[in-house]
Length: 468
Image (cartoon, helix red, strand yellow):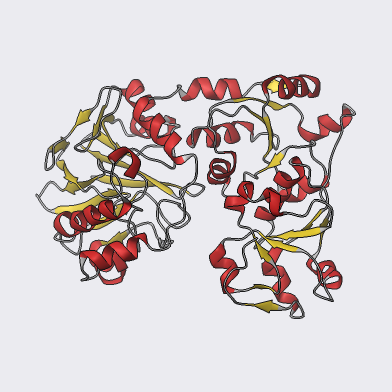
């Protein structure tokens, strides 16, 4: 028996490769399925099952492409209603994979069809659970994503989750290994650990949701502090339930190289967003006017989903040479399939063609300290509310990047203002969005709060957030 976790840091997502006696099951595959196919071929094995724990909201699964390429059965738990052929398993139904057994445990609560797959080894011993978004390490799945489709409140779903955990998962042996679908950084929960594998026994000891508490207390704790889910989530659910374009077609279209002239024409004719995925330091020095920065080396795909929102939005890319395919692939993971090509030769080709460039004024923390000596600057902190609450610059406004598009009117039109985040990545995203909306009176602070607080003389405070 072989179990391999295939973890994708950008999405904080874990897919799983399970093999026994030449037969393979893939749990919650990503959109690009070639790595799974190749791994099975290298092992002389055949993919037999594609196990989906639920209809994912934060990424587009590769179940359809993988089934098309391999002939494997797609399996969902009870109540799932996809628009394509799939095995809708009954609670407790078992599937043989070589010498092992995969048993379906219906565990609704995160969504109605959410299911956990229990792996029983060749000796009949419970070995591991693949919990999807039902149970994370340190947390459980948020119960507010399926309420519209299920005509249920998040409190009702949280109540179902309470019973799913206590009736289906917690009775299992402590030594059972927990393999969740997500880790720290995912928007599918709020308190996940950075670790990605644990034992159920340890989770019973440390996970707040597995304590000996009443259903009412569980509901209160699980729903407390839930921020609105990213706007692209329901669009990804729709794609996972109803189908999507083949990944090869998406990559072929997005891999179209365009000259500066052709790129400019395409941007004007399609209404495409010009998405610049280079490093933030390169972007501030020179970029195409009104382009949006979201760098590949940060939490790229989730930020695209949170800020661009509409998966039908046409996109044109400015990417580092050799990373164009990576950008298109990572966009497709969250359902953004309308990438129509990239700027051949990158920003240097744009310069050489004599095209217009824009810049963002960006200063060091030391320069910021000098300018803010009298604490008179207009400062916008785009970190999360929790980050801001723990410590922030005195009199700074808190406008989290996640909701920037909803607060554009609150930035000054004429007076100069300063933007910072924790390390410099999010503030450049914010600055690019503001510039694209006509706010040119901004200054970015390099290195963000982590560098500013090292200067000692910058005045800080920890209070309730002063929301912009």
